[in-house]
Length: 330
Image 1 (tube, rainbow, N blue to C red):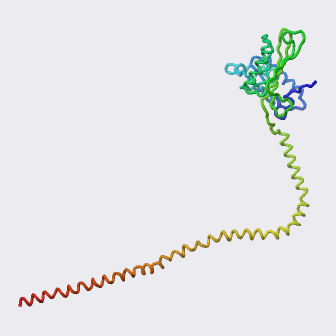
Image 2 (image 1 turned 180 degrees about the horizontal axis):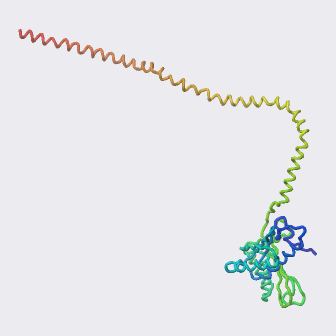
Image 3 (image 1 turned 60 degrees about the vertical axis):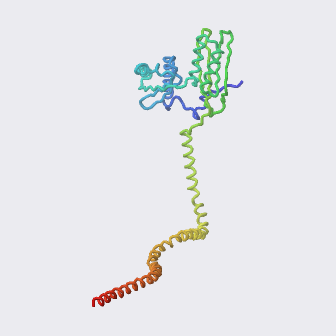
């Protein structure tokens, strides 16, 4: 019979990151125990706050605890009073400085831990398990999930023999590593005993981000290539020396070919002096204008000659009457 691997652990380091971010060789056991104490205390103290995930990050002098919750108002309290109380309790438990960060979960219907907790609460209130499973899966699919599967196991309905029931909608590809599958589980404490609840929610494919180790491997590979290139330099130098005469013989041809476009490009620059030579042309145009004026002068001469001859008779005619008058007076 096939068994199911934990979907989150199967994808750690590929598309998911660890919830505890610290490293220690000498005090690993003590720090791991501290993480368990912090998580159990938060889940027991804030069961009604909808805490889905707790991330712990350790520095030299301070421990940062990030709480992912669907109801941040319950965790923070009025003016941050509950956060201060929580910080004090965690500092007493661990004996270290604690920094508490609150991060809100926008869509609780797409968080597997919160969905499993809601099913467990319904079972504790004596809601029929089939109805609880069906309604919860429908709400999850309505919020945009591509697939959802919910399963309950135990003394369902108070039966003497334990069994398991599940409801599935959509597709849940557990063996596709790039598939973004959120997994959560919870327990319902009933009068007949405990009932386990498991939920898988498929949100689509998620491309893996390059990790620090992958980047380091890529850098090391590039260094190895550079070292190999340096090792091959004597052979490369020999081949380059053998190919040098051919390259030198072929070198002038491209140069001549390159000069031709330059000469072609310079040809348009030769007509540049022409405008300077064209400047004196108006001076040469003067004789043409004079020639054009000559016909006018010639044309004017006939008019000028009669004009000069016309006054002559007048001048000759003018004294004639004077002589006649003188003769008459005599």
